[in-house]
Length: 272
Ligand SMILES: [Ca+2]
Ligand SMILES: [Ca+2]
Image (cartoon, rainbow, N blue to C red; front, side):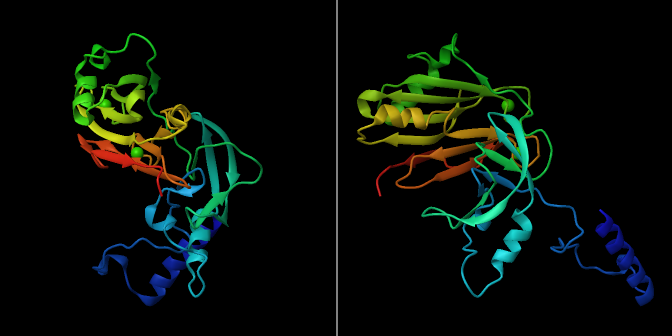
């Protein structure tokens, strides 16, 4: 804070001395990457940046100063969340990662957390309800949603898990469902709007797999993702981990103003 005041003061003095005024320049205000500006919000999922461009950047390559840039952006104080609860604050450190990504942010100690955010706000503005009984009739075996899934994929599914959460804050809850058809080694997760129309199959898996039950357990709604507002705009994003061969893969999906940010069908595979 003190640094900011001094910098602002120095800038004012410099402007006074040079005799120019900010209002005379026509250039658009550019974000200043230097010190002194409002810190941008940084979000991590299991230590991996949610910013796609940043996480796909090899900062350990020689002959560039990318690491410096990432260090100044990512080595900061974070609020760590697990099971929708703030568990602690901690300062992150950039470290090299294995096969799947170049780098990640680690925290001292063995902290079990899902999401880390560099700013303090409520990332769970609305409750996530886990519906275990009295499911809406649309999710019955002959209900509208289940019939739509069966005809889309030529399967015969039933609901394994059902969550309801108002993602966009319009007062109406959207549904996230995990459905399976064991006979066909099929499982899918879908996002369903309050009118029981399917917005997206945001995970679809269908292939022979020896440990299918374990796979479904690992990739159910509870264990393989997070519904969280990761950018403080009051819209809760769906962060979903996808079944992937030897690695870790996830997507951040947004349902906003009736629009879905991802593909209508996200196919997944465990094959190389
Ligand atoms: Ca809603
Ligand atoms: Ca958001």
